[in-house]
Length: 451
Length: 171
Image 1 (cartoon, rainbow over the protein chains, first blue to last red):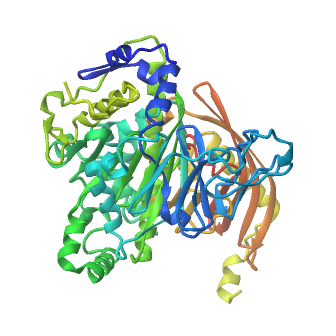
Image 2 (cartoon, rainbow over the protein chains, first blue to last red; image 1 turned 180 degrees about the vertical axis):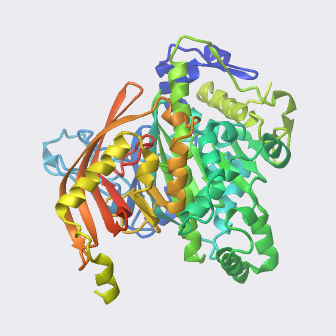
């Protein structure tokens, strides 16, 4: 039991500010794993990673290692990667194809849904040990559900269903999928992993922060602005440099052209930022024209226009998922310790799109998410510096008040800020945080409205 | 070898192992001493520089990379390293690298180009922390009028698929 009362937890989140302990206190971190990662729907993988019966991948919720598999009957299974006997991690690989999980210690084997298949020397166990009992095997994650191929798990046996939890954010996932000419996505192009010495919450708090690029990323913005365009490029540098220059858009641009939308349960997206004409290389780019033609061939002109009109930058699903449709990428934040975080980044192939679209996704991912990126490295420095700064006994409160007075209700049950420089999306995440962290077991879960 | 190639290579020493090794040591020194402009000048006008994200990665086009720079991006990378506003290099990293086990894997018939394979150990110090990197480098070296140039360079880190912190100083 935690020594922190719900009353105390409530006192850490105040209008326009939060207490630094939320980023530094190991006790609060453990509570977050229990009450946030232990109850919310957490993204665990994509169905394209487990296409065929017997396919599995290693994944996790919070610090719990899990196995996500396609069972022999086609069902999606999610079990703890831990032997029911002595607790050893059963599968040590990142994924593969199998018809059973087998522990290397005493040879216990399991079906992909976690039930015990066989165990040597069963006669040696007490008479009341029943290997067929439903709770005898590798523990199953109570709930697993998929929305258009995106698979989520919840460690809580009850609570809102996945689509209820996602709410209006389903439209951001739709945007990811609808852009594929064949209506299907496929995880492809490898995984990036990066780590920083700061709290897990900092990552999503940065992803819709439109007020930081001009300052934090100045070194890459200026270097890109001064880059001669006639230097040799195979396309990689062209996309990267365009993106870095875009980061240098003045504050007036962010204030006039870009919006921020937030929704219950902590979700948000930044919209109307880039449009496709600027992004993929312009409407006159032959690759983009070929892509649009492929979407039109499947969907018709009118529907294609609707699909490509959705202009969202980062969409964030609380507590730890962020994705971006226009360059088909998705990031999952893994809390390791109160001041240690790992982020995994995945890319998608749009089924039916030209190969060059996929190559553009790769080039863009390298510059935005690579550990050697000219952009990400400055974000990592910020997370580390916040980690160092908050570790001191300096000021107790962090401001999340920018745009506070301009928050207003919006359609689909959401709220929006005056423009993209508002910190409403951070306030919205802390509303969700409070709701989950102060939830009384057995009570009704609800998002806490802004003061 | 064409007559033209033969004439061009006339009077130029072949890229032997000693010459290559001295060049690689010189490159390592430029990086350790943060002489990044001089390092960039070692590359050809259409060079690429690649640090794969996966062991045995075959292409930078179908899989993400820790770094994949064509010449244009490499120029931008080096220009950024000189910026006073590069916060991830405040304070600056100090590095110490050892290059060894140099072999020539693939040499042109006229001796004017070759691919070297070498090992490196790199210690980076920044803000009270030391980070060790190690791996294998491949350089495509070509003779130019005024010295040797790098046509491409590939660096395979032993831990390329680990969760890494930011990589600032080139390998």
